[in-house]
Image (cartoon, rainbow, N blue to C red; front, side, top):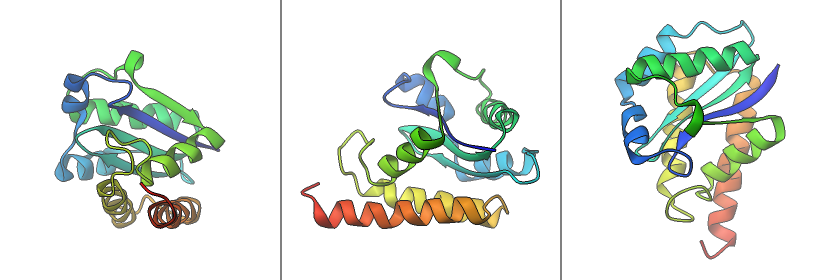
Amino acid sequence: MTFYALGLNHKHASVEETDAFALDEDAQWAVYDDLILSEEAEVVLLSTCNRTEAYLYGREADGRRVEAALASAADQPWPEASSFRHKNEAAVRHVLRVTAGLESMVLGDQQILAQVKEAYQRAVDAGQVHSLMHRLLHTAFRAAKRVSSETAL
């Protein structure tokens, strides 16, 4: 099992692509309902106007299933050329940076923390979060609060 951060965002994809993959809450619920992942897998979907990402603990095949489900929900082919896939330490670092607002269009944006918390809660409600993702996201929330309170961002 591997930790992945995968998706597309304003740094890698065009505005048209990020718009096409921006999934509303109902579409995100549909993705959770349609996903068939390995038994131990955990996933959190984050979709905002600037990014649609999945934070996944699972197998390589689970990552491909998540990409396919996101593409299906967006009614678009998966944008291989403009998407990203980070693994293990790079994936954890990405989640921490996104949650702290360090990957936002406006550096230090505080809105993303609330969006990640909402995404996490939706994943919990969908039964997609277990112990590893729970620990990771709560660590990210604490780190984001520290970045906000201890820096000029």
